[in-house]
Image 1 (cartoon, rainbow, N blue to C red):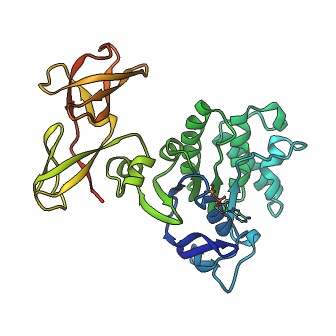
Image 2: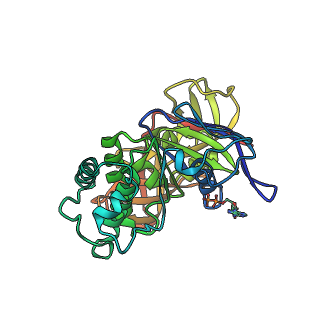
Image 3: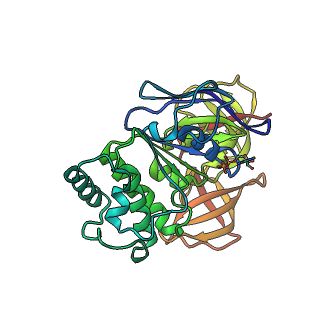
Length: 343
Ligand code: ADP
């Protein structure tokens, strides 16, 4: 648990009064743009950065406050870094058992075998790091950090050195591995897809503060601020006016929400729409002009211009192959409207 933590470099605040807590065995993520202080926060949890205010607790033990700091090696915190940093002269098995010096030979061998199974690399224990692919190396680095059964595992942009396709797959695989071993973990990344693949809950940070700490689903569909809305996925703001307790008057007509909106009737608002909220429908009476088209395999991502000039993203099955300039039917498919004040 992090309580009211502030971190500064040369009197410049990087993190300000930040609080968050993970549940047992939860996989958390800190997501934010580059330079927002994610790695600094991880370093503070691991014990390599002094606190300017607040406290950090782990399983009822005070790890750090402004007046005391437990040494990194006694915190029970494991760490996986961006640069995989396996020991090149040690085999896979020797890398994994590196931190198990206090263990008996039998229990050490058992833990290595268990981890090799968990990371899907049984039989490769005698290989050296250079004989493994990047993804395999990162899984070995994970196993090495997991081996001593830390109370908390920290992962600092662990996939950033790997190619895009592998990153998404590895984030889900590592999620499965950590869930099987029940290790509470906190990853930091600037990549929203990686965060979605990995975490139970994600804290979006901006300017040293947590904007929203929530499930991937809620961050995407119920963002609490325009920053979170834009940071976790594509979408556009359109001008609208509150038309009733649950409805807004928008360029796409009157839209109804699944719950009361927190604005009085007549209030001008910004309505946030994602490409998956707007779907192409030949049967719709509402038409928009197709101005852009991106083939995405199973579907097209269309850009359509509404009568008032607003351009929105819109998904269409890929066999609906319309031409640029055509007027096509569109309809909204959204239960929960995302509405922000105009200022
Ligand atoms: P992130 O991990 O989100 O990319 P960092 O925690 O690495 O961000 O850095 C946050 C801010 O602190 C950045 O503006 C960075 O330039 C600054 N910073 C990081 N390390 C140091 C340092 N050792 N000394 C001074 N400033 C630093």
